[in-house]
Length: 153
Image 1 (spheres, rainbow, N blue to C red):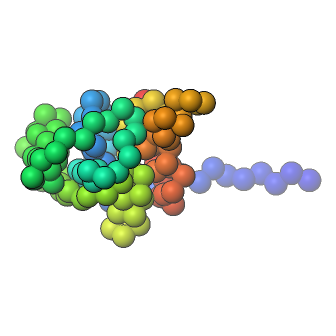
Image 2 (image 1 turned 90 degrees about the vertical axis):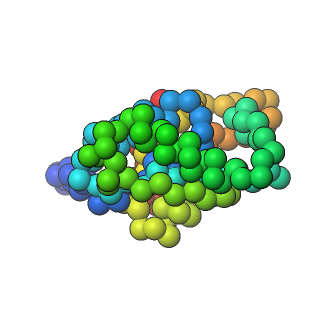
């Protein structure tokens, strides 16, 4: 005997995390979060990868004295490019240093985030490319985060 189940409606999140790694098209993730969750408080998380971290997804790390400040400034510029001033009041910009695949799920858990929205940057890597570049950040975040994650591609 089959049991019919009602689909559980997704509850609108109160807190949404949009990580930014300073890569192209992340404005789409922020715009999506602002439009899809109009009542949510949004944290735009500028992730600064440590200089000693292995490179992944073709990223190049530049040496700079104040990379955290630059990441925060880039995130604020991203916010200004996407949102009107009346909308920006519900967006908080934070900067953290760490490996994105580790720090994003950790931040989501520690800050009691309800939903994560991020741009995927092509998460399908196989064979030699996967061994050389590593797994995509979005794939790692989805696997390590207990919260719902929306990955835009």
